[in-house]
Image (cartoon, each protein chain N blue to C red):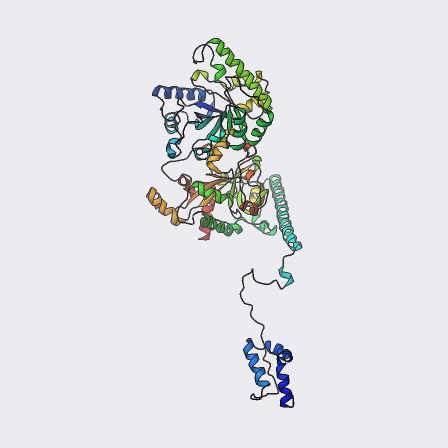
Length: 307
Length: 309
């Protein structure tokens, strides 16, 4: 099972809606990734910390129209699982007090710290799944093993988006002239090497961040990329399979369970299945007949014998 | 006592001197006033000055119903000593050990029987029922009542106000609930042999659940339409399932009254057939490695998910 936790949503504010063309490109990207083997994909809504989140109206908190995307794509690609992700670009974590109110509306929560203090405070205080960096530009601070290691012990993963390095100078991404592209690539490799050193090659998630279908790469390409960066085969593989899946599961468990103790629902692969019907109270979605499941039939039998 | 004057002097100190009589009389009469009266008439001029005291036959007093908190611990045997506690735990452990070893013996016996059948190339059915009795292996049916009790406890705990609350209300309650008597099914486990095991929780230990599992066609989910079973499936009895790295699923039956009400609201067609409804939950064993007593007051925290499976 391959996971891609970063397929960017075309808009980055609450006020704008994506145009039909943008949605078309997004759908094409998802389909391309699916055909490359990524069954679990998260649509990423990225905002600045100063953006006001409409906490008062719960329906508007998640602007990603996941129901529309699912209705369009899932009938044709039944194995495709789509999730939503929120990335907040943080410079001052004290502004993020309202995170508890919005965390039930997104499957995966990520932050993108822009300075060292933000990274430190986000990993210690906030309940998040992913930390991503802007790897295209030179990181303004040194990644300490202590900070990164304690975050990984907590279960927070670090994200590497490869779209910056594959959106080359040919022109299908508007990243500027060729020297700029060279600089971005140089920064990318530098930063990833830093990250690998600080994390001791644990807890890294590789995702696409692909804005266009052409920026998607398959698993083999990513393995090659990571091997050139010095990871061994199994660690490189866990970057796109195991670690990504764990980040997704920890995010899903935040919604589906009470502090990772009891999960609602008991179907197979329950954690990664969306069952919510917004019109009803959520418990009714998990209600079923006793005769439907095997253990239910056993319970029914017992009840009969008692009556 | 012969002269009235001397008696009078005595009268002042009567309270002291009549202690013995009072004490004796207190065994015969309940109220203090009757005793006072008797003694008064005995030692006064106006009274009958009877030379005898009548002692009634007494019966042991009925113990008044007191709350267990106010009752004095009079008998030494009532205090549960540390050694007795230890013994109870030891006995339970011995019982479980004995039962599991008996199960093993019976499984070996069935295997031997099967080998002999193949050698003789004839089918003789193994007398399983008699053997279960002989080896004293606990039956799943014996724990049915425990399961019913647990279901009614869940009904009281979760659906007490007559409606189905949201998951955010239900789940915290479930995380601190008691699971003795719950029908658990192992859905995922690091130990793949455990997957599919199901049974009623007999002991909720710190690191494992001890389940009493059903036999033959009820033993596993996929065994319902099977013909032949493995020896251990035929025997049933107790299974120890470690909590670490295991996901358990269980169903809570929604009380009929509520489910019919809710059913009418949603779709009337469904409520026609009288099938019970249940709500499914999954329990993460790795986060449940506490004794039930400690879990009741515990504040849970999210951790890294690496150890869940």
